[in-house]
Length: 227
Image (cartoon, rainbow, N blue to C red; front, side, top):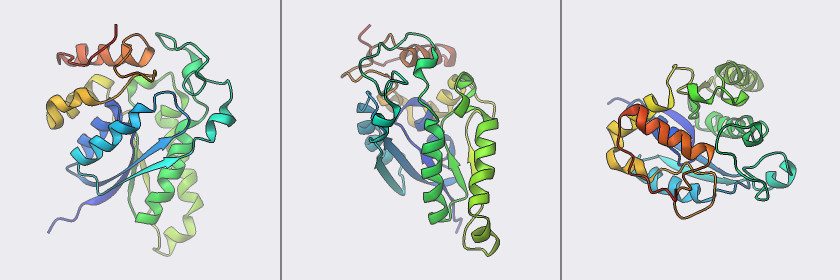
C-alpha cells in the first residue's frame, strides 16, 4: 500500500491556496490550516470549509488569531476597514509578516504531525510581497528547522520543507490551470476579494488579479462580480 506523505497547507479559500492543494493532492495527505486574523474578507473562511471537504483534507483547522487586528492598527487595508482598498498594488495591501506568522503556526502543527511539507499559495505574480518570495520562505524554513534541530537529530521530528508555486516558478494562471483540471467549475467558488460582500467587488487589486489570471489561463471566468 502506498502511504502518502503529510503536508500542512496554509489555506485561505482563494484561487492560489485551493489550486496549490489540488496540485499537491495526488502526492500528499493534506492538512489545511486557515486563519482569522481580523481580515475584512472573512467570507473566505466559509470557502475554506467547502473546499476542505471537496479536496478531502485529512483535517482542517481554523485558527483564531484575530487579536492581530489590534496589533496591526492602521498599517494595512486588509485589517483596517476605514481605509480604501486600491485597485492595483500598493504597499498598503501588505500585512506585516503575515505569511511568517501563518507559516510558523502551520510548521508547529507540521512538526507535531511529523509532516514533511508546509505549503502556501505564493506564486510568481506575488513578487511585490516580500513574504511571498522564495528567498523569504527558504530562510524561514532554515530557522524553523533549526528551532527543532535536536528533535530532528534524535528522530522525534521530521525536517520540514516550505514549498510554494513561486518556488516552482509557477504564475497565478499556471496555478489556476492545474487547479481547474482537478476541480473544474468548482474553481469559481473560490474567494479572492478583499472586500466583505456577497459577491466579488470586481475592482480591488485581488479581483483584478483574479480576472487577469482567468484570461491568461484561457478559462472563461464565471465568477460573479459586482462590477
